Amino acid sequence: SSAVFEGYIADVGIKRSLVSPEELDPGWFMPAATFLTVLYSIEVGCRLAAYCKLFFTGSDKFWNIFDLALIVLSSFEYMQFYVGVGSVSFIRGLRLLRLLRVIRVFGFFRDLRLLICMISQSLWSLFWALLLITLILYLFTVIILHRLIFSLRNSPEYAADQAFMEDVTNMYGSVWDSLFTLMGSITGGIDWIQATTCLKQVAPIFRVLFVFFIFFTVVGVLNILTGVFVERAGELCG
Image 1 (tube, rainbow, N blue to C red):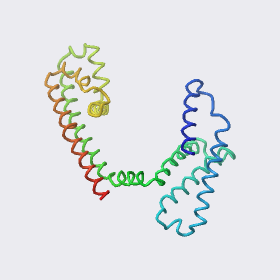
Image 2: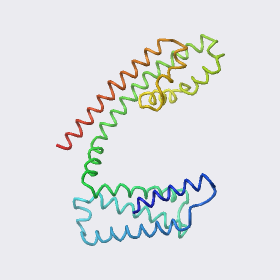
Image 3: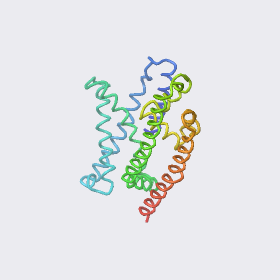
Image 4: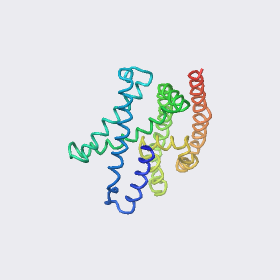
């Protein structure tokens, strides 16, 4: 119920903000959230009283500690709202932590717990996969930028083409912009042919380079990484 209520708050809040940004949330939101937190606290308190030491040492100890942490963090928000204690900007930021209650739903379903377990066990592999993709994107970014720099400095007609300069600035105006463009090209964020529109004016070979980049990353690297994660998940299930 708390997760559904947080979604309702977000839905109402964005609609009111788009119509009237200075308008605050309805006054009954905070009392309703407080009531749900009290019920949540009573549930955790009953479990603590029933399990005693096992609350912190049993098989569900991590979920129990997670519940306690959410209650403590929520209490700071309500303390600021009702008493006015603490920094407003910091305490209001704690409101987002109430969304972590949605994670608690995973504890009630075995299949969801299994999925979360597989994801958490694959985080280290995910880190190395992210590093590998970043290095590949960085390599192609440097190649593209160096060729663009050479063309802009030695061919004044490119600088006179306003449409060309605008495209280059938007897509390859910096290392970060270039990384973002290449990432969008391999993940469906933008059409990779669109990303080569300005590059082909500099050198037609860029089309061949980009085709190789897409083939290498999408067909090669990403499929291999997918296979690694599937194998890793199979090991966990076994």
